[in-house]
Image 1 (tube, rainbow, N blue to C red):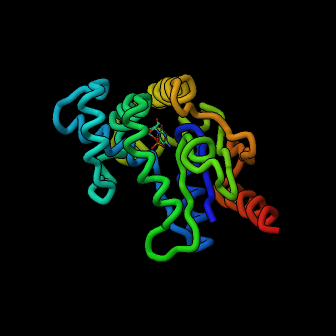
Image 2: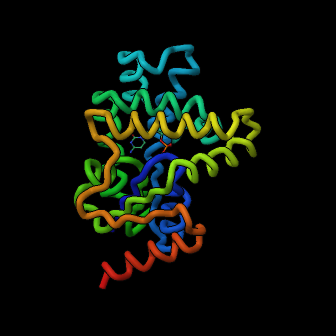
Length: 211
Ligand code: DC
């Protein structure tokens, strides 16, 4: 069973996808971490995220097991990730790994939950369940601001909002695999929902689908 969870930055899809994977005993893949891993590899070597040749090389050489989970969480890496994610060859280089994970979840898991921007549309168009998780830009910026602040970031909430809106624009307007809900996706607006309520709604959708 494959559950696709897509949506814009800081909509709460990672928290939701992780909780669903734990609930059903499925494997979980945060596909944004792959793009962040590519971006981090470039920044670490002093290379510009817009350097297409270097980005492709980094994507081809990416070992998902070696991605530093803490270092990729900065605003700078997130921003650079959305720049490398615009490049079709980078996306193509990462696609096979994501599809393989979905088809053959590690550790014998009976299903997989993948979160990202194009899981329901491109990576797993045949996913059993597709959720499109969203929230207003202001709510998402607030959540991301609190996360970054807790991690010691000096960015103001207004700066984080500007960053969220810039990333939305880049993610939705790119030519290849733009962020958009799959036609058969269930929309979940978490602007006014707690994590628990959003999780409950997602489980309801999944259980209804399973019949
Ligand atoms: O979800 P995130 O903030 O970790 O994602 C970082 C960037 O990676 C995001 O701005 C766009 C890109 N991304 C993508 O293009 N496709 C995905 N499936 C996941 C992330």
